[in-house]
Length: 119
Image 1 (cartoon, rainbow, N blue to C red):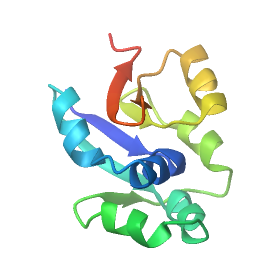
Image 2 (image 1 turned 90 degrees about the horizontal axis):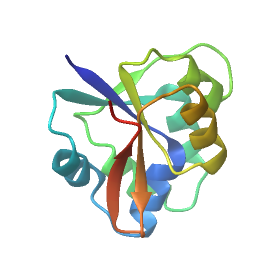
Image 3 (image 1 turned 30 degrees about the vertical axis):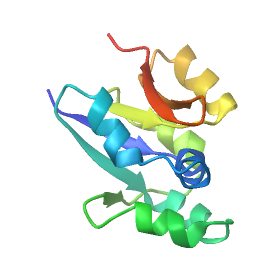
Image 4 (image 1 turned 135 degrees about the horizontal axis):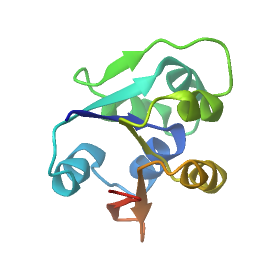
């Protein structure tokens, strides 16, 4: 089974801020097939943020952009099916995802990623 890992705005910004190689860390913790994607609205959110230039370097050409309808990024992430693993550091979004029994990747101790709610 192939999973899709969706990067949220704040995990990208936190990875830049704390100098964490997101892609390398994802490779370390994921012993299953996956692809990494980002929502088009997440790219829009990143444009106006501090460290956005570094964030865009982190999002290399291997990461596919998913086109979405109108809406708030968190709500769009929650609408994705359960084969999507959401990588986020947003506390409120994590609570909403956990209520929905979703798999989450999150940054711990400002230096490594963990997977939560894995089956």
